[in-house]
Image 1 (cartoon, rainbow, N blue to C red):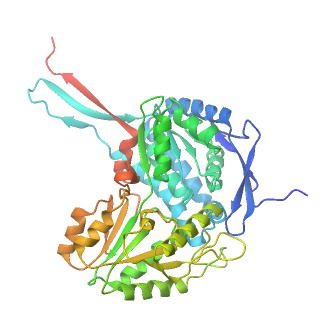
Image 2: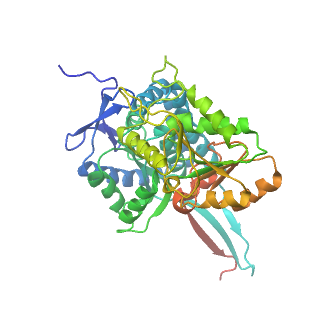
Length: 484
């Protein structure tokens, strides 16, 4: 007897229509909470990728020529239908990612906020005049849609990541091909169903998932895309740039992995720092690009910090399901469990002291214990790896000069955190930390705040008005004032 799956079978969304893969292949979506299939999706082949590229090219010709107000009406219609389907979308994320029900709200609100924010922000855009030194000409800079966008999405925040790309693309007048992760494609495919339901202009949004050879590489190597954008690892970004640059000059906007330092001085509000640090490691099971990777705690308060964060970890309710109301769910997949466990074992082999947790939880599902490890110093290879799990590596420091050097000793440069009450200390780190974001005595992320890294953590930004720049071209218009 054929198994009935909770979410059934989902189809590709290409050219304004839902359809099966040309090769008739499908792919099982597994719930990480119990390792059981919850849906199948159409698994795109090369022919589908080519169709998506052709469709997106035609979609751009249509969408970029629509009056702005008409584009915004369609975007608001899509946003409102997503809001109407919020419970279904949140449930799909809960099952495909194993997230807590509370945790799914961030995904849902993020895509809605992105569609709203960029619809408002694009209206504020004005031509930029440039004064002519000789008084003989008038100059202005106008913005126009860039072209077709290809977006590769990470698995950790399925709809947040999708929204961060879809919002600015639609507002700017670009068409987009969305390639979700195979670990969490379900909610993206549901967006395709919603687009079909409202008869969204065909070709403007295209959604497909498939393997690297038949989808990933052809999307990159095609001359159709003007922008390749991604949320994922630095290694993946390097591959995408190499593949896509072989055939044409393209733009890139990439948010890559982080290695965030979390620095706590002796004069800081220790309880506040503990609360924030623990929340960032427990939230989304630590699968957050801005989660602290290295906790640098002043030697005079490190014992207090370890005791506090361990106390929180000891009381974390682990589980799955809306009714169970857990604090933390499983990791997203088996590979993540193996990776995080390997990091823990390496940390201990390099002299770390296991304070709490330490490994996978027996039974069904990809659960991992919240883990605290006290490291002797920064001279270990393990602190250069992004953990992407509920593991806190805690290291001591004595001076601000020392900890600045330790914090900056990484090729990553996404987020950083500093806790202190001393203004001169805070100014020192604001000026000298080599990260795209410096959070002082707290943290905040929102659609209107730029989110991006430096060094190997990326190119460009997500969120804020600055993200629109990646989706627009600047054209100079010069007119002579006195012509005969």
